[in-house]
Length: 508
Image (cartoon, rainbow, N blue to C red; front, side):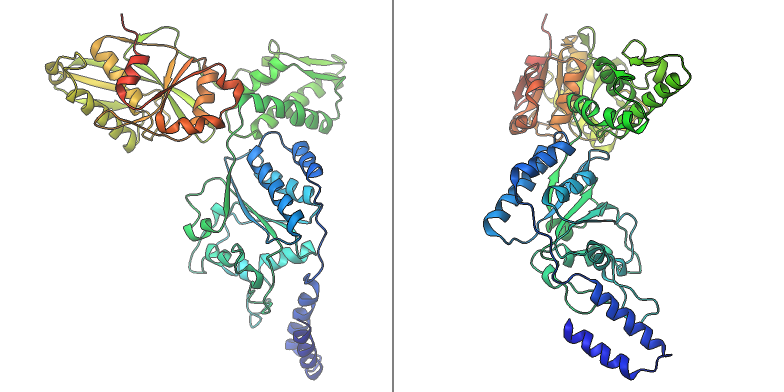
């Protein structure tokens, strides 16, 4: 770098002062001098301090915190370590960006954040060559200049929202940045000298991984952050959101109190999300309304409980998932995964005189329709064993409906639920109201694994179900489920539909 600057200075001496080239060279030398080449901050390697900082800023997120503490421990033993490249994947509002900032605070490093949402030009990452008018380095080098050290925590937000067009593909340009094997000599078009990024700790965030190109995904270590449980949301509201909003709105804990039952009601009936952004907005609404009451002189102190919550937030916006009140024929409770957490679905089956048609309604996707067809074919092939008249299926139409009708649904995990509801309707046997189930079905009646078991289990617990039927291959996922939820539920592990029917149908 020193040689390069001396060479550019020699050129500058020989160029007339009024020349445009002189300004270009001067800007270039300024950039070279401004970028940190050797200055580094010393890492705070005290694990207990780091743990305190992470716990102080965030509730839960155990796996992500554990990974940071592991990195610190290894750093302490080896003294020098290539910065890891972590990718925090999870739904909006679960604290991915703020966790990355907490990591920087725990390590005692500078923090730089750039958002990649909508970036579609390769030169945003790599910069322009000096031959262009107004050329500048890319965002990576600009971020390093802002940090002023060679080892900051670099947050690349929304890495799944990058686009590409005729100006190049920024995701491909990032391959060099996010590869620990080659980012020690990152080449920026403007700087031209290889720059060492190996000491930087890169933390990227994304809502989903399927839009990130495979080669880029391969270079990152994925940490999945699932949505918060009801109990976690309650703790977050009590410890972080409410005190923060009370302070922001000029109130104190003496002038405003929100009871625990009111907070639970807000979480259940006024918000439906995986993160806590809407919950934070509802807390702000409570504080604003309380501030108005206090300023207008109506009361000196506001206490909000479940009974008077409607006066502050209006009527509830969401229906709180409830189990059926009685055992019903032709209706089985399935468990569904949604981007904002789990939910329960009641699958209804009705039969009437017709020509053997299978009617499917409820905005079902292709995979879900095929699941229903597979369940129907299995039942036809086993009609005698199931004590169903084979001619009944030829002379009657069968209608499967999945409420709520306006919400699109897809995926194979309702297979066993549809099969159970069909068999219940065709044999006149009720399905137990306390049983929920999830699993894909094959033509031979085998039960295949599904995803999102944690969210589905929380939804079942919230709805008041007592027994959950899950596929054998999902048994390993039970360790992710909080103990407080496991205590109230009975898990039935199945490999075949016969085992499902044994548990779900109420034999007279």
